[in-house]
Image 1 (cartoon, protein in one colour):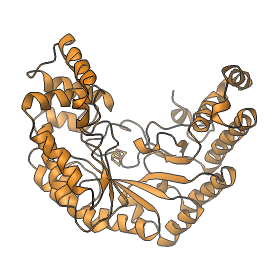
Image 2: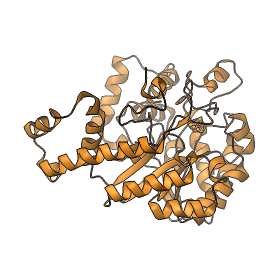
Image 3: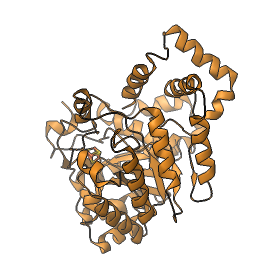
Image 4: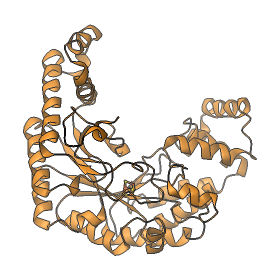
Length: 388
Ligand code: SF4
């Protein structure tokens, strides 16, 4: 039985949800809501079968206090991460009760990673009562005044309903970045994948966040239009992003899993997955069509083919396009070598093809596992499924 399924109104100690954005890997996770209130996006397996709830404010405050208590112990014992010793750590851990270990581990992980940022879980902390969110943000600030960044996921449909004054009050209380799953700017694609938002709503929500003085990170999902809507997906996404000019455009390439409804659509051939080559062309169209914005493009998701496809618009546009063109200009066998090497975690960018040790490792893995041109796509598909 999970913590939330036992009885959502009872307190079972510090809670941690299943995911956070890759850029929040070092953040302290504070669970404000559980799961997803919408939960209908056909590509998303994360919360399927789980019901949404907003955790009582008192529980979230207790979580923050538990982390604070553990953090205080750790700071008194070690002062800084480099002073941590195994015997010293064991001595403290031995004083922690079994039901306090999750909070202790979270506090220790955060301590070792610099304690600079906090991420509010799960899929939409802003679905909480604004006054509750503001109170917990203030409490976070009081407990951890040194924190530089507090961030959350939110949905465009939630953001457009929040009063501007409430968003500004959240900013004043410490919320300084919101991650939104734009996924696409195409209404056809958004409708097809049941995103529960239109292009116009995404734009309105994005501008609202920016006007409130909160940093905005928009996730775009290459491949989401399938083969039929690939070009429209790229062009309309670029147009939506041009109108929003978010601080960050984060790429998170589609991977289809059988744990999400899109898996069944693929099986029944109602959705046709784009090849890597199509996706690279799609990203190229997207980047070529970004105009008049100063966003930073990030590629910090393991599902992306190029981990180094990053830069600030507009000055880094050509460098990003060079990476894509370099890949598209390669012989198919070399493209395959890179594709599989990236998904095996050996390559992070095309420059790694110059590293003979890495190339040798990928070739050896392919030989040992009989990975060839003919079965490459299915092996890559299985690897991608294991990432989500
Ligand atoms: S993508 Fe986001 S909004 Fe859609 S179901 Fe998943 S968590 Fe919910």
